[in-house]
Length: 258
Image 1 (cartoon, rainbow, N blue to C red):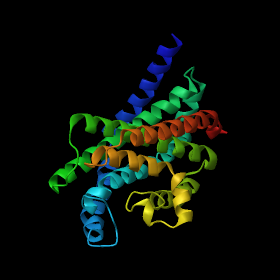
Image 2 (cartoon, rainbow, N blue to C red):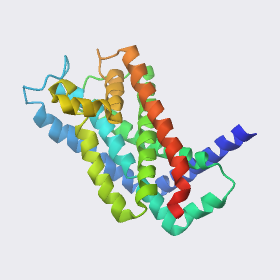
Image 3 (tube, one colour):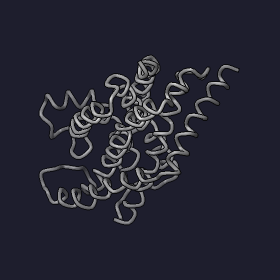
């Protein structure tokens, strides 16, 4: 009964978040503009740079998984500000006095963020098809990409929730979010290989979860990049990180209203 109650509560929280998203899809539309600009403008320009060794494929193919990971990061990292809004409206108070598991509240929000990531994934695949980029479109590969995107979205949205619990105000959250997104993005292999980084930045990238998200997506999306052991390792690190962050978020979530 406890397990079924937990999953029912998780599904209920995710359902509420998805209903809000369906009623106001403005955020999804605005977030879809960013990957389009990165691929059509930045990618086209950087593809002319000869010093970037992007493997056997074109540079646009190389950065497509990175742009997808970036979209996941940027849409999930500001998820916590919505939680602060809910706190100000009294929604969080009502959730915390309910008999629902705190872990179900956190996991439900993480799952709803994962569905946001799926929308970004659809945009990237549609744009790649329009640009005739050579990606892997096999059903199994696409399903694996969708799972990875949901995992990455859950990880970064939970990280965002932790930040919200610590800073507690929208103004501070926006400042911290802006400070974190760019270092996370540029200290990863999203737009250039790790081999181009100086030694100290390589070390930072190894502790950056976005690096493992990019590597997993690149292995699953780019032809010739598939290495099962590497994908399993990347997904294992992402899963362990997500579980650790969720444990921290469950502990901190009640402090949001204090």
